[in-house]
Image (cartoon, rainbow, N blue to C red):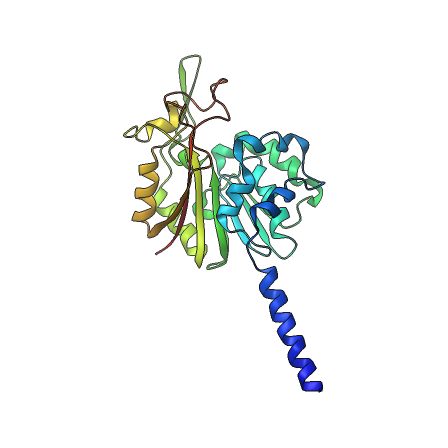
Amino acid sequence: MKKRLIFVAAVALAASNYLSAAPYTEQQLTQLLSHQDRPAEDAKRDYARKPAKVMAFTGIEKGDHILDLFAGSGWYTELFSHAVGAEGKVYAQNDEVIWRFAKDGLIERTEDNRLANVSRFDGMPIVDIDVPDNSLDIVFTALNYHDLFFTETKRNGKASKVRDEVVDYKAALSHVKKAMKDDGVFVIVDHFAKPGSGYEAANTVHRIDPDIVKYQMQQMGFELLEEAFYLRNPDDDLSKSVFDPELRGKTSRFIYKFGKK
């Protein structure tokens, strides 16, 4: 009888662990958006960004370890933090360029250990991120892959340098790949640029040709697993800056999920 009870308890524990490790449903993630500690200002962007759908697409689970590349002020970092829970881990990275714009927001978001499972890499190139090998379940970047190739900005018709040259994407992607688990995924969301627009679109309209993303990821040993269409906008002609007041929050965006080959 005692052995039988032990067996039943073991089966129950295994079942519990299995259930707790299941990916979140979109409905569960929608409920997460109403987390009591979430800033009200963040929620104003939910309609345009559809985070419940995007996060469900990543396959996020409790306990996951996630790298939020070019995390900006941490809009998605916060959602990931709540989703993975105390046993999970979120790394928020911003290189020197993005950190200039995101610094105040991310510091405020994480002050007083508010998001205890978040570690920041501030002003740090991707190649210098210190994350254990084979530890990441998800690598994620939203609306910032193009910033690898963002080198100058223009104000009042005058150009000023933000980088001397584009980021070495081969070194960056290789470093990230090493930190991913074999079954980990790399999800990229960004603004569509016109086909053939090259790297210059990152400077002029802050977009990227999706063929560049797919080519570079394939070149570095990733395969495209799935594509989502939640953020497409056929009315976006792709010629305007994403910061155009009439277009902001309404750009046509691609969503790709890659895995290691």
